[in-house]
Length: 271
Image (tube, rainbow, N blue to C red; front, side, top):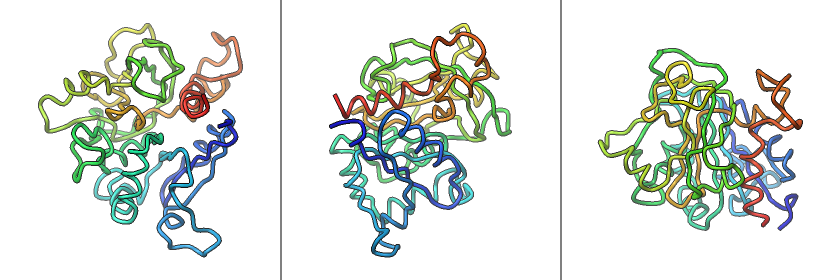
């Protein structure tokens, strides 16, 4: 498979607002992306606009405030997806196809039960949640992420372990928590921790370097198979050096730090 043959479904509904950046990010690394409304996947569209999830190689859930984030962030989008195309979603994941959720997309994946998926591909109920930031407010700031995955996650296959990336965050509910007292230990044991917030020198984060108070400074996780990843910061907003806050120094190319995430998953499918 060539990069241009990789078909990406960037799924949206009312309230999502990062679908353009997500689609552009995949196109910048050579893939063919399409912005698809959920109604197109569930048959509530004219015949010529209907789409089938199985026709795509990657499913991407963008950021924003889907359905106004009423009830809980991402809960309504997840409920609509699960009720209408739940079996197709599960098969998509079990077939090994990549699923990416960024910010609100991460919240949706957790609400769907596709993350953390500690015991099954898609749990019947959420086993974790993204809670309100410790600051009690929306946090929009540059954040430094360290790749702590040991090789399971396909979205970091081209990112050296322990490498740090400058990726912007913009969210009000990003604190990953669970009622399971062994939650963090299980994630670590399963190599499901992908990104952690760190300070700019690579040391342990504290506010504001960790913008939400997430335990163990977790910024992104994957499922046990490594083909589903959710993260709160926005790599699609850091595809060129010019959208970095320090763009005038420290870069030997025009690429931004977010490029490697998209290159990793497209490269995984094309190798």
